[in-house]
Amino acid sequence: MIRTEFTYPSAWKGQEIFGRIWQRNSDYIGVVQLVHGMQEHMGRYDRFAVFLAERGFVVYGNDHLGHGRSVKKETDFGYFGPEDGWKNLLADMHTLMERAKREHPGLPFILIGHSMGSLLAREFAAEYGDELDMAVFLGTSGGSPVVKAAKKLAEMRGAKMGIKTPAKDLGRMAFGAYNRRFRPKRTNHDWLSTLDGAVNDFIMDPLCGREFTYGGYRDLFAVLEQVSAKEWPYRVPKNLPMLLMSGKDDPVGDYGRGVRHVARSLLRADCRKVSLRLYAGMRHELLQESREREVCEDLYSWICKYL
Image (cartoon, rainbow, N blue to C red; front, side, top):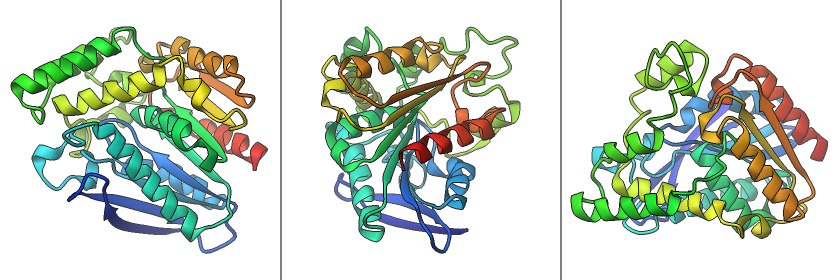
């Protein structure tokens, strides 16, 4: 297994993005680009990337602006730029895709996004779907009726408190209820996984759980608003194979209801190759769960169906 690390210029001028590649020596059958979630980093995907690379894929991924090793200053955690920062994230993803395609021309290209990364991947599929061969959305959200108001609140408090100020109040508002269904309550992050060790790893990782700024929440709500709009599924290529995977105990996907809503909206828009997998007894992070191997094998089998 060959692991490569590199940096490249961000769409936000003056910033650099940290990237990773996993690959074996030869005989590649496709390229996968991973898109990580909120308050985490690409290093957490090493097991999954190795799983794919061992089966012949070249795997690329980057730490978003405001995340992981793309952060150079403490005050940049959870911040993506002064205006429309979510567009910087999409542009950085596209730059990485262009590099991957230059280095491995002609291979099928699969985009896989988790959580916030699934929202970015969904918008990416709408904007650049003709450049994709498949897309997978892990732990995605069905949207929220108050997302417009939440974005406005983030803008207002950012204007008052400072756009780069950590927004603990918005964090509590957005995610405070996620632990409600789980007993006994051991930590504030029990909703991530049924595995205590996986939850502990997230809590103890110094690059995880860093609070978003008001600007970061503004951009998170903005991209959620984009992919929750009635127009979104009609912007996605009709023939693009898409797989949605989620735990039935995942509060982000409203315990399966929100994920089903996304799948139905794509089918209503005449997207012809939409698949859905919901896993009983599993929570938000399917790649950090008790049946992680089952999820990986299911995902791999689905990809092979369209290769």
